[in-house]
Length: 133
Image 1 (tube, rainbow, N blue to C red):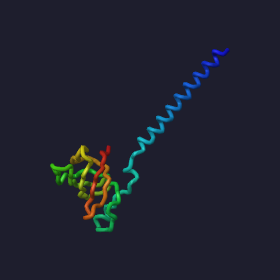
Image 2: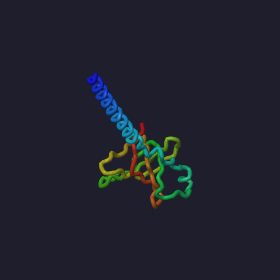
Image 3: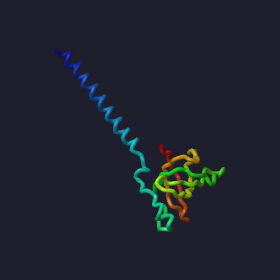
Image 4: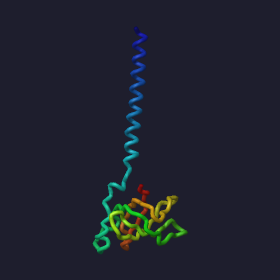
């Protein structure tokens, strides 16, 4: 009889350990997949920007759009000026894209999700973007 009780304790311990590891992996996966900062940003007010409205510099906005044209690409730095057409608009916005070192550049017809700020001279600056599918 003592032998069966020891086996039940071992099986219970193994199952408890398995479910603990499974729960910890689920919580870690939730936090890693939740890191979508673009969805938390407000959409860029295109009409207000084009109308000369007052926008706060250094506030972050989200632009979802297609790269219509690459106007300028610096060889010395990773700086690109691109014409972005927001998905819900027919206008084109000039955006200065300065991604982190080692990041891929942008290409024409690429659909992107951009995190932009308004620079001191009213230009749209982007340091972080991701490809949208």
